[in-house]
Image (cartoon, rainbow, N blue to C red):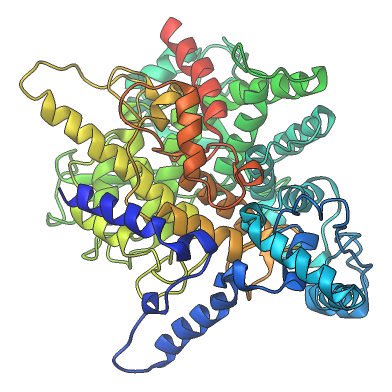
Length: 634
């Protein structure tokens, strides 16, 4: 009943004129009984966003023309031939605005200078005949399509493409250990925008990621190796050569015999943040997702557009690398497990599964938090490496990170945070187990993170809006909404005998539907528990940089990270759970999606990202088909 009331109220609000025109109500601003430094920061942020929420119909013609020239509004029919994008070479003023120095020649050749172009447009209008200008203004305001804000697809694509294939400015040296991250952020952004680079460039990306691989020797309990079904299935301790298409984990002499040893040395490995750097879960997660994006391009199903030979070769290279390193990745994941006493029990004298929980380290001797749990579970699900040996006690650790607020901290007894909450929610969904957490409290915490005035999400209680949380909080809500639907299905079928979840199912659809591999299952839902229109409005009006790239908020600079997660959040708001629960055709889904698009439908509709993996649903479907079907046959 509460959800029905919510959706009726949301439809009423969406029909209000201020949603259609981009304006907002002053009553939506946060109110404070006492002014403080933090309340002033919130007020300043709302003031910062307020100019972007003006009523476009009330703008004079010269300002509308300027918005058309920078690409934020489509040109009207008669103006189409006359509207020319305004560009300027990098003047001293432009350099100062962009924070560039003389050595930053890697930035754009063409930079939109707002102040200068506005003056030019005003002067050009003043030279026109007054009567003709008035007629043009009336015609412009009569054309509703001119007020539909546009996603700057080409500029965003150009911004992230340069990061992949051109030298970065000197300031990026601080991200030397984040090379796989930069690759993933940019590739995923380009994939959502349907602007992936040519196959020859993608082959270079695969070579770069392969160079980031770091092999290492790990010590595992012999008893664990003996009882692990995956290791026993794919291993031959008497040979240093692989028995399948995977690199061997066995070290001659060191692991020639499993008997009479407490520990055994095996060869493992993972992706580091750069060449020669230590294996780490975070860049490893980014590297695997980037390889899945490229590999998925060569695994397209019938009816999808085919790719050129160079792209197919890049896809073959990426898939071969994933297959070859898969077993060593699994060994490395096992070495990152850390078992500890549960919070509800005193320190036990004997560690058992009933009184312990298990977290993962981000790297050897590194920190233990839910990021590692999510990153590892995401990789193991895609590559079909999830086993009981690996995941025993993991749900209990994740549940211990839930706070009294309802969200999740990075580790037990810490503050609830949007990024960690997403990691926890997605990890629990991949494990199909929410029995140990307070879902109602979690839903309330997530719902309170959307800002009523700005429309975007904040990351924590009493924090400011940030564009990157469009995905972290929005995708968390998307996953929870699927959980609600699944619980309803289970309640309706409680009187009937039901089977367990399909081994490939991550809870993204109906049971026994292999919904991780079912693209339609992700779009057969009723709606999300946040205002999708307001979120899209914030991303398109406040987070876009007119020179390309997206940002935290209007006062912040663009970067690759915020470009990726703003676009991912935009995708979540547009696509996930967009249709009704009844089986519908893809054509109906597309029409339903179109009604959820804020602004110009032709430019703003982007690809659908998977809420648990954050790669396009097509890519995750193709990868899951390969690895899960292969293991089923084996």
